[in-house]
Image (tube, rainbow, N blue to C red):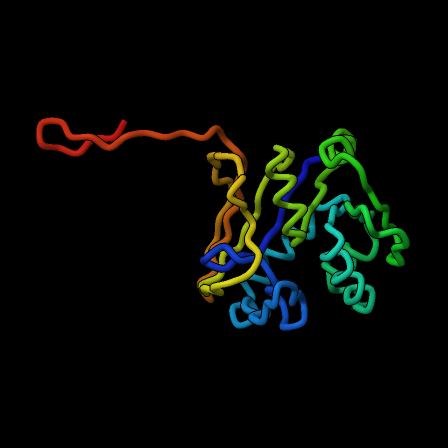
Length: 210
């Protein structure tokens, strides 16, 4: 399966609590719900497109528990997000979760690279990660991410958890899809590529790059 990471970010890189005040208050975070003012029809179309593709979901414990408390209560058959989340296999990487109640949930623990590598080796479509900041960081640092799908909203949150850590490996990316929503959010789908650097110089009075 192909592992894809889907994340909502502020301009300053925050991914914590995008959907509501009570979503994730860890670390004293009190600025939740920052994407809601920018959630327009274009944004909904991007998310709908995401949820047309998964074969299974991979979630971190905290995101799983947030989803578990909400999505099973959404029974509208026309809601593609609820339909896919409630019906498809869900894998939760956690060393503390022992008794998940959401249907079709499997808890994974142990060596991250080994366990997720086993999932990726299976035939099938997309293994999608949504939210799950700590897990997404670990997957990226382990070189397990095949595609990043990011929506950056026009807001500076100023505090909170971020997608990339100071230990993140250097990487370039190829842009495979993009869109700007009516509210000014920018969607980018990126596949990893080798990191490159260069130099700016001067030759015959002209600026050069190499």
